[in-house]
Amino acid sequence: MRLHRIHPNPRNREVRRDLADPYQMHASLSRVFCPPEQKCPPGAILWRLEPETDPAGRPRLLIQSSLEPDWSPMIESGWLSHVDPGIDLTQKLALDKLHAGQRFRFRLRANPSKSMDGKRQGLLNQDAQMQWLQRKGHLHGFALSEPSSVDYFDFMAQSSTHVYADCRITHEHMLRGSQHGGNSIRVFAALFEGQLSVTDPELFKQALAQGIGHAKMMGLGLLSVVPVPD
Image 1: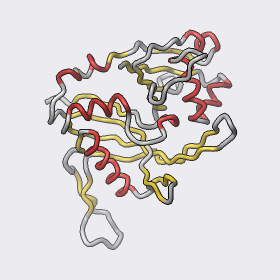
Image 2 (image 1 turned 90 degrees about the vertical axis):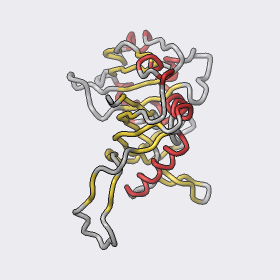
Image 3 (image 1 turned 135 degrees about the vertical axis):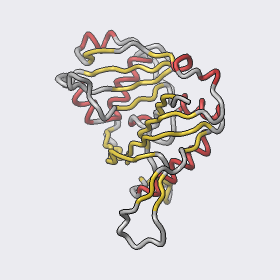
Image 4 (image 1 turned 90 degrees about the horizontal axis):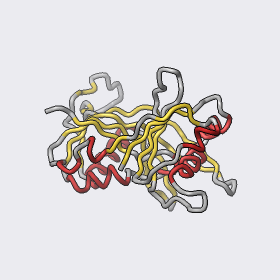
């Protein structure tokens, strides 16, 4: 399982198209990891467009996969400006020695949602989004860190103050894409950042490898972590 960071060329017309349409971006990235005659299996790649640009003002993309990429077509076409060396996550994160109680800083852009009448609806309320992430943590072998702050500036009529886990939610917006048949896709996305602790190492490793939540073909679900020093 390797993590790749790439820097697309924003002057390239196909890059601008892909940045505006996450579904098309997924298709472009899939062609790097799978031969043209072979369709990439579901979950073969996880990726995320980072909110920060690089020092040159170019977009930054993180892509995670167990497959080996061939960047040469993207470089030759002018789609790519630069590719950073890939990182072996199993080695970098010492996943073979992962243990319960280990703490990580994390970033996750995901689709906090629920199913209603057979359709998936985005959760727009941040309390509901936080509860969604806590449920996912229970399923995927981690827990959010203990609450670290109290919201004393809650002017709504509440019986008590809000206490939040060590996690913030930003960059909430609706992603829009177009499938090859012309069908449009709309997916709500939110960026979660904070600290977590591992409760079940095996489930947590599965979450790192397979992602969290729905809409992975829209650039959602990649869980990125950095160890917190003891």
